Image (tube, rainbow, N blue to C red; front, side, top):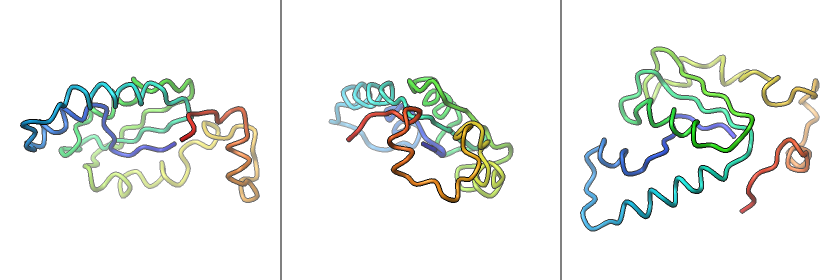
Length: 127
C-alpha cells in the first residue's frame, strides 16, 4: 500500500483547513478512523512532502506511527509541497526500494496481483 500526503486525524485536518464542523460529532469519526488505521497490516510506504501546507507533515508521520504493519516505511520528499510530491520524488515512485516490497522476486514483469494477495507476506484486512 502506498499513501501519499495522508493523514491520521480528520479532526485536526478539518481544523487546519478551517472547514465548518459545527454539529458534527468529530470525536466519533476520529475514533473510528484511528481504529481502522491500527488494523492495517499490509506493507506500507507512506510518502509526504516536507513543505506540505495542505496536509501537515505531522499528520503523515502519525499515520505511519499508527499503522500496525510490521513492514512500513516513512519517506519525506525534500522541498515538495502537497501538489509536487511526485515531481520532487519521482525516483521514489519509480523504485520505492524494491527490496522493501518484494525481496524474493527478481522478475516482476510476470508477477500477478493474485499472487501478491495469496502470498503470506501480504496479509491484510479484507473488505
